[in-house]
Image (cartoon, helix red, strand yellow):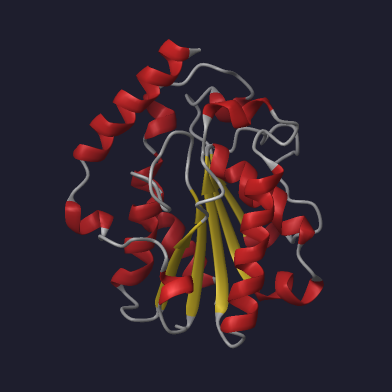
Length: 212
């Protein structure tokens, strides 16, 4: 288990260093909490072992892609710090912790309370997809109706839930699962495919904006 985790960390760092810094878009990922309201709030949960709030990759690229054609219209907010993205979380029944899911719920509620006129986009990668998947069914109808679209990358329990979020419209959910990614096909072996979802950021952004 330790060697698996170490390999994931080293591979993640290697992939992250290859990402163009402009594409990543340097943000602390705490804009909902810290900044004024914008037209869209993007709530994202990072993958296992990834640091910060948006993580090393997938989150930063998707945030940047959302902002490219809509500058000054998007606030990006990562789930944390209560969500630690630790490997041990995967042993829990939801493949993440209740603390993480509840923190995500609180961010959706904050978005609705602080910025009631804003639309909400959401996303999660790997373990983070479990966080978002667990949080949305807990939202009130009023808050859930504000969530325009959800993108999940490398969702580890995709097969278990038949690619759906309970009580959330299927046409507002898009899943990214590479054919060679055994993680989102019910396996346990992590490969490069699972670490490559950042390249889908622009596609995810285009799809989310198409829902507005």
